[in-house]
Image (cartoon, rainbow, N blue to C red; front, side, top):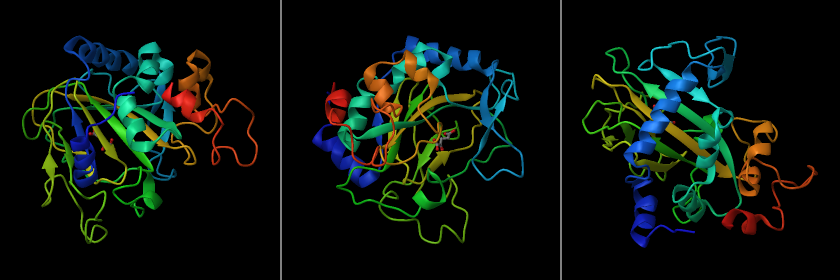
Length: 281
Ligand SMILES: O=C(O)CCC(=O)C(=O)O
């Protein structure tokens, strides 16, 4: 498996994110942009506006509310939309780097496609991932993260206010002071609005404060997100091994929570005997 360099490890520990250049070539980036346009038309999980539901829950919809390919979209559970989305689950080198950072005892916890249109109406936002509890937890810089994500950038983001992923370097280690008393935005002191090209990937843990900046670029910004968590953490997208696992390789099935035997108390906390072998493959 490919490993990160010492310099990349040092950056991960100090800044809390890594920028990998040109993981996809232009054709592959275009392929996935087109795939996002395709799946917009078909049913799937999208943010649910039902005020009765707790925050962060998604609902099953016939299609994305905005059918314009440049309009907003936030689709979850991508694996049923085709083999290309399944292949990304453990694709080199990104997955190799995830294992290098997290170790082999991991699950795929979420897949997501987001389109951020160019608009005056969206002012960006900043958050940590994984909900209220995970926000309070910070592992030390020498520990593997509890959860992290790979963001595949499918559009060029080479200017400010193009829907840039904005990060607060070091915030995975040091909580932003007073964050519960004041709203942290992509324009707050300490924010870095990242530039990148279609095909680049950002890796970052859920504890890093981050989020999308405004997009005034006149083009929509499209990304794919693949999240991973330690095996003992629940995944976002499924409450049991999903049916799509039948189309997956042994390693992908393991990443979807198929341990190779039926659940029994202790499962997921103490790992299967062949866990490292299956994941390191
Ligand atoms: O850039 C985006 O559109 C959202 C990305 C993000 O904040 C996230 O992945 O949690």
